[in-house]
Image (cartoon, rainbow over all chains, first blue to last red; front, side, top):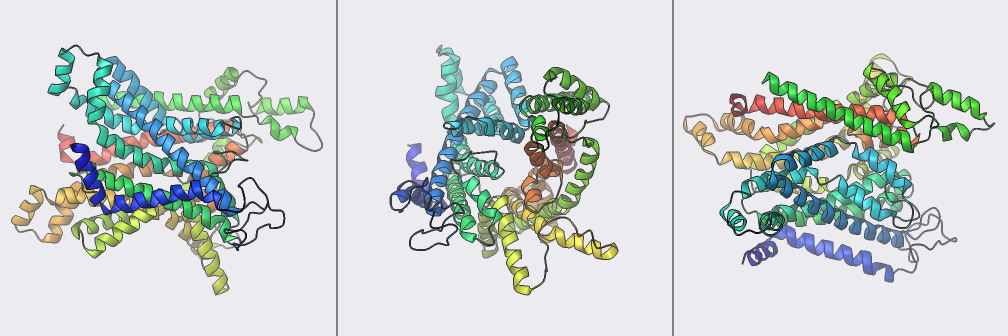
Length: 280
Length: 325
């Protein structure tokens, strides 16, 4: 079985192994860690403003008395969820649009690719920056996920399209056509599964791109809105005072870098396991 | 060829027009420059505010489509309108483009050259210590977002300067206006050090990875072996035959990076306090400055399409097969 071969290669791959272990640990820390901390992320300790890391506040406190340990973990949770959701949506969208455009060709192809070109030219930064601060609090981060995903699928969909054009003429696809299977079913049953290695790699890389993208937008205040926190908002708040109060910057920035690094390691390992021809 | 280029130009003009129009509509319908005048103390009479906003084509009481028509007519005549407080967007843009150019030219070129060089060395020394070192460091650098990297650099410099007791490396702004002549030139160079490092480190890591992969693909191919077999020295075969072919993908990315250079350095510009095009977009959004936002978007769209054109030219220059077709 192919999946077994891939799994064996993945386990044998050192990068993927370290990456998975690191990511697993980070997820555990983000989701189980809060139960060990003495403070909740919404709590404010009015007796300790900007106190450096000590036995009570493990990672120090902010200028309004928030516990850095608690809010950094909260930010990590947000970043992980956003990364996963954005990757899932954008890779799924890329697969569907690319496969439909490539398989049907003609007008469908032209209209879809024109849409792709338009989205590539549109100022995504501007659109997200204008819309996201205006979203209602509460479920606003879900809308933010949708916005981020909407602007990150276009290039992959072009790759999917060109691969679909070559898959379209394969014998098994033609056989399915002559058996009278509807076109959309062929796309989901025969075309998309054959692109799975590309899509899995793309999804993994999209996770880290989305985590960085969220942090980047939040850095300017255009992403996750207060009172909610993400690694980006924490880094933005900490970087202004990074020289005087390094713990405000070091913990969220370190968490972000470790998160991205471990996801990238997995992506690289996956590429080696799924696509042995490439030597990256 | 001429017909193809013309068709492409036409499509590009349409895309720029659509992107800029959508940006204008979005900005004009959601942002309110009025707020900046309403909050003043002592309060300004509403009629005065209206008159001022009318003068700048920013009045939200005028229908969006009518404002858009005024704006579009201006743009067609080369006038991007007024900023929220009445300055000329054209002047501002002219100034900021050169700030960005001064900031980014060195970093972009340096990033490409060093990255390609490191990638090529890494491929030639595959699996040796050099290759591993370059590989691991580029991997780590790629995981550090530029705003974290820039802040780290600023912290390090701050501590270095404090330890030395004087300012060895400047970490904010573009130049010291009190100096003149040669001193000011040196001062400008000094201000460039940190932003250039923070800009080029990421692209060095990026290009070195691409270049290594491409170079490895090329090194195994027949034409490199032939070049060696006909008696070329290893060095000549590697640089003239292998590297040139392997440059094509990196060159494509470089063309895009070069084209989008002006607006691509928002973080670096903001963190090191340079007032270039990238910082302008963020400032304009925060100031609810509709016309500036639209102008930056227009400029960015043109840059992206110019970059696509540039990448075609570069690929054609490097790859004879493209020219034949």
